[in-house]
Image (cartoon, rainbow, N blue to C red; front, side, top):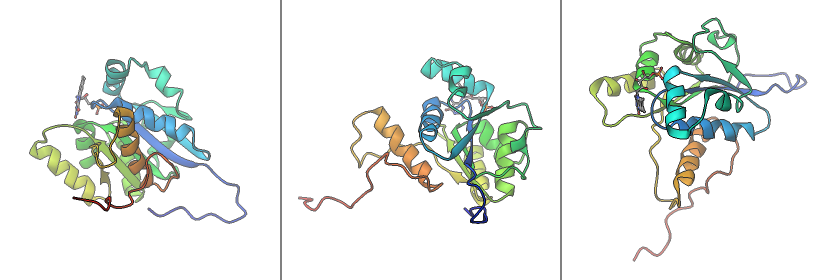
Length: 205
Ligand SMILES: Cc1cc2nc3c(=O)[nH]c(=O)nc-3n(C[C@H](O)[C@H](O)[C@H](O)COP(=O)(O)O)c2cc1C
């Protein structure tokens, strides 16, 4: 990721991050991500929730669209393809889609820009900024795998939310935070969500 250069005397601008929540299972990843970013100073979040994302927020977390939107600094309508984030002139650090459905993956992989989530991701890719797709489906068919390859070839990062167990998570929250900590690492955001791996314990017998 190339950070935009700024004159040292220029006023500190917030780091901007676009967050998309789509209709794959795992709405908690998007919500928890927004909560974490809200606590970090100097970060401005721009949120997009697809219609299927709204369904899953209600199904999985009993949350309404408005509740989730209060966690973001700026909210965009997925149909508003004329929004600021639809243009490469909008400066941002990049975009995270959490969770990312196979439908949105397909749209991004093929440059369809058929809603503002796909358009914003398209812009992030064309401007060579960081795009992280927390894709979720199981098992994968060949179209899913090919689309993930295409996005990777374009510079995007495919980041399925697959938990690790080596840090011995005690509950689901720890699993989620560990995964999101690794996502935030990709943007060099400072956090203390998980201890850093310090190597295997000495006694393996
Ligand atoms: C409860 C529920 C769970 C779903 N889980 C997934 C999933 O894990 N992965 C996926 O690709 N689609 C999943 N879907 C289907 C998507 O929501 C559907 O393909 C939708 O059109 C995606 O649109 P979007 O990408 O604009 O949000 C799920 C749908 C529902 C209702």
